[in-house]
Image (cartoon, rainbow, N blue to C red; front, side):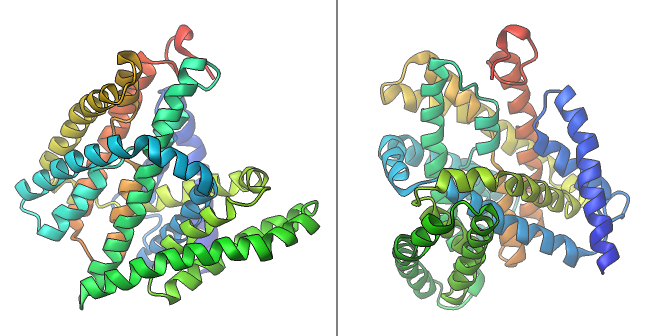
Length: 388
């Protein structure tokens, strides 16, 4: 087993480095390179990594740490301010996009639960593509970034709600009672985390903040402890990790913690998307490509138009609304996470998972290519658009 893990790590990071170089020359998102390495090394192509249990464990660990690190960037005060600004746009657009995904799933002959998860996945836009391709040194794009971030933050919260719903659907018995217990436990978990951060973690950080190794260990212990505690309350490890990150973000040294954990975030980002690619069934994907193409086309066309119209209605300029709409006009890495969790929970069919995975990859490629061709970004094709 040790040799298997060591060989897997070698394949993941050596292969990711090689394909990431190709992706950067092609002005593509690095996520595509990570997924491509997984597909090539997985059972569908070379079979270099064929152990489904190992692939599943890599994905699960990656999900837990990614959600913790995502929550760490969302301080409660900032979160409340952003939600108030973006709630109208996000909720109205989410209904439209959910109906789009549900309709495509229904046309593909999927079950109602499958259609529901496809609809959830269709509502989300990519945080990584949205922010990594956005310049921050130009005043106009600082405001554009604020608008985009506010929408993405609220979408992340909706995604956590979707994860709770998936957990509920997975129980099979008394789902509404289970949902009530889970949603009742969520605010208790959050409030308890804030209290523990204020009276337990904060004094420890203040006393030993110069010992970087201790800050690192305490942060990771908080993540895993919160995840385990949430699971014992009937919630999932993923939800616990996310709430743990948000409560830790309330700490005065949260920016330092987030910066020190950035390499860890990148490590598990690669692991998670590699595992998604390794678990990708090319034969299964081939059977859903017409539906996936229809869903991707609908997202690429309807999302920018919808965001543009809603942002204009809420007072943003035509230029900003149009650009923000295009930058948000794709599906999300959270879409892939949702279906990965749903498959692990045996809530949805593999056909529905393949539909979301293929559609998400198509929107990643098309959307990121369109952004770097038309708008300023750090990896734009033309010199006058290339800005940090």
